[in-house]
Image 1 (tube, rainbow, N blue to C red):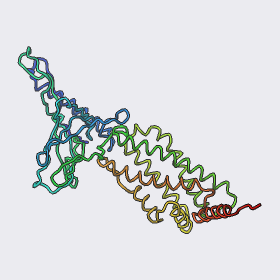
Image 2: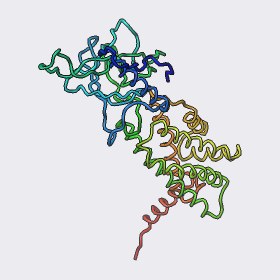
Image 3: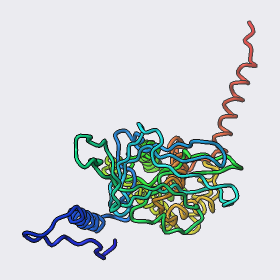
Image 4: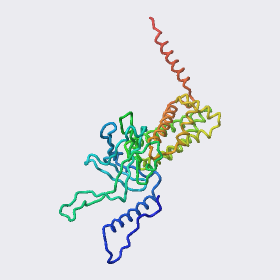
Length: 377
């Protein structure tokens, strides 16, 4: 937040000469005060696309031209900048909107750029349809100045972190052809602000419910078995720890469409921390034994299993790279779901694959032997 004042209220006096500059100065002072007030309450990741019903898109980018003559056009956008300025752009009827040129081939060897939309709140651009009957002729309204620019993904350019700038897309180049990355998720206020985030929420909800149901089945199977092995006891302790977390998630998860992507990642990263805690509560011998047992059912080496959860827990969140955090968390949750579902389907926890294969073979041998017998009168 910028704590310095640039615009001050006008000192109105009775009988003073008044011009349009006084009203503009008053408007700028009020706008600056409002923006500073909003930004003082704004959380670090509370900016980006506005929420929409069903996660329908509210941003439209398109490319026009070919090769080095390609231009990027932003036709619509509805969101908030990190500085708290509300941007509402709808220029679909104009056809071109706000545009910028793609970099020439000789200018840069970069293959990816962030498309940054910047706004100058205090720059007044006349707009609207003039009233020809009015004297002097003028445009009836003003809007702020908007600018579309490209920032290298490898650059530490401060334009990306501008209080009045927000990333709206990702441009890629392959040889001389440019394309928009359709998998890129721009900064968003909530999980319902973008179709991909809405789908992630649906997927996470389904998988968390499946994990919770599998945990209940596994714990029930272990407790019902009279002769529990050391592996079964370790799995029981591990699953109890996970169940505490899933039980606390449900109320928060029912409202997940209205919360920030950051809070969703935090919730699932905390779940990853619970997995690590569950492993910590076991002795080294019991942990190795249980992870080897997991490997038998999910094919993931013990070291890989542990590293996967450490990566999810320690990976920093980047609001400009939401998809990276979502993919990392999603992969870990899906792996855990597959493992727990496999364990929940066993006759008893501690059962090995070899015993299942042997029993199936015995059944097949018995049935095949039965077919070889023939009753003779």
